[in-house]
Image 1 (cartoon, rainbow, N blue to C red):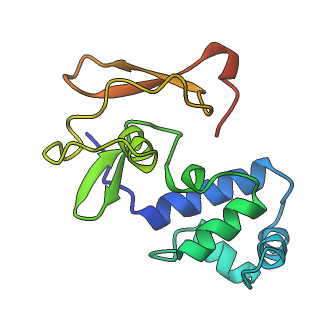
Image 2: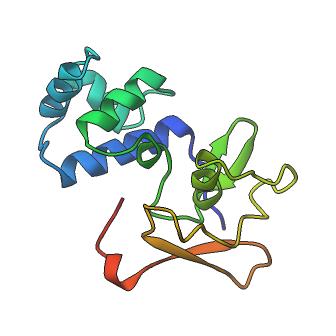
Length: 155
């Protein structure tokens, strides 16, 4: 059974926590200081609320400041790459992480898909080319396979 779709704020919080722990920031306080240094005043409690999903949404300014502090792209923070097939809520519909990432990169989402008809290809010329896609046994559903040489990369 498919899990309920994650809201963008939930995905953002999960990704911030994952990248903070994997990077140089061992505490929410340290990350709050780094985000504040990049122009967005924020405290440890706010970072903790974001990471734990207690905030329903985040602002564009927050997305940019956290991406700069974590040395990553805004897309990396907004798309759950741990499970490309997991549904993410965008507006009134749910789409897979693979479709949402493609959408952020300018690829259209089939208006009638509702998460059922996802792109079965991926632009191999893309500079962030750590995954390749194949069509699964379910018609029209794409799945990500980590490339062998990049299997340890999480973002």
